[in-house]
Each structure stands twice: as C-alpha cells, then as structure tokens.
Length: 279
Image (cartoon, rainbow, N blue to C red; front, side):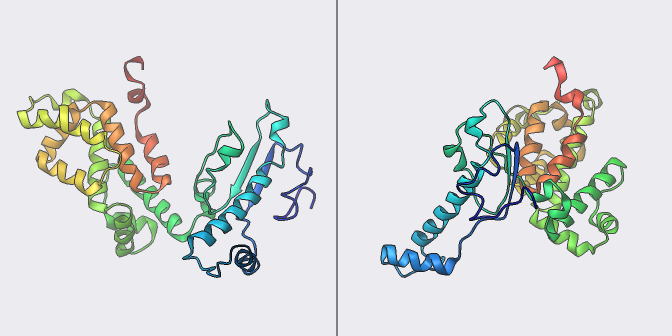
C-alpha cells in the first residue's frame, strides 16, 4: 500500500518519506546472520561467530544501528528544523546512540504495553490486572489481600504470590505503599501525639536519607517500618515526615514494579498536596 516500506529497501537512499511528520518502523532490522558471519570472518580472520564473541556481536550491532540511523533520517528533519517530526521504533535494542546522530532530538523509551495493553506479554497483562484489582480494593477501603486480588483477576492465589514476589515482594510492597498513601491523605492533627527521641530521628534524619538513596529495597524499607514500632507509631512518624520525602519514597519503591503501576498509583496522590503551599 502507499506509504508502506521495507527494511533494507526503503530505509536507505529514499525520499519516499521526505514530507511526512510521522514514521512507524516496525521490528529490529537484523541482517541474515549466516551471510554476515561469513563476511565478518573474511574481513577479520576471526571465525568465531557465536553470540559469545563480543567482537562479532559488536559487528552485528553496528550493522543494525546503521539501518536504524538511516530509517530515522528518512523524513529529512534537518531540512525542517522548525517542524516536529515523530519516529516510532518498535525494537528490542538500545537506541540511545541516536542522540549523537540527531542532536536535539528527544528519545522516549517505553514498553509497548504502555501504549496498548494488547501489545503486552502474558505476564505484563497479568501484572496490569493485579494492579487494577489492588487499586479497586484499596479505593473501596477493603482489606488488600492476595485472595481478594486473585478473585478479581480470576487466577489462583499462588499465581498472585508468584508475580508479587517478582515485583519486589508482596508483603513488603503492600505494607509500605499502603502506609505511605494513607499518610498522604491523613491530616497531621489526627496524629498530634509528641514524638519520642527515636521517632524524631526517623522523621528528621533516617527517612529523608533513605529517600535520597538511588534505589530502595522494599524488604529493607519494610524492616525499617517494623523497627519504628506498631501501626499507630508508624502512622504517627509518617504524619510528621515532609510530603516531598514521602513522595520520593513512593517513586523510588515503584522502580521495583511495572510502569503501569506508576500510572495507576500517581492519580491516587492528591493534587492539592503536590501543589501545596503555592509551590
């Protein structure tokens, strides 16, 4: 059909897409490995063309990148610097190198399932269903359990447990996120009791330092909450922790779960708290 093209045919030396403002490139353009293995051996004298040979892999990557660079250049963005041009790449390879060939471009990498759930793997679709079920139960004020989620999703409790473990650990994640989200909604005057010296340490020093870590281990954070005390003591401490610190903790912890979890949790954070004090 008009507008369609093919790797190794239309992505090089073609003006077919010179006037488009959007281009969709499907798949990673891997060449015939048998053919390039022979070429590599002839050029280098190296006959190890297995995936364990980093030099051969570098050669393959170079060829793939060259095709992608050419494809991205088909709309001739250099001739239209004032126009926004978008190129969509559905590939399973790193594309960060494109910034060197197209200075000023913006590269955004996302999982295909974030654009449409149907494009996700079976595991991604299951995890999305788990997160949706957790959100529904949490918003209804009901007890968040694996059994309740399994019932909504339509799978066994064992399957929920398996996926939760891979997402960072069910017990740790559930405990931390519920405490933090509840704390965002709670009014400070509901927890007006004075802090002990140990609790003050967590509020003023430990938790802010923890939020500043590059990555957080959910199990470690859960242990920290246990060290603070019982549920009432944890809620008291979190009520005094600065909003920015709690939000940062949530963001760091969500690095352990799929992107769709971030998209679902974010709307649960009150906007008036994000923009509090006129900031």
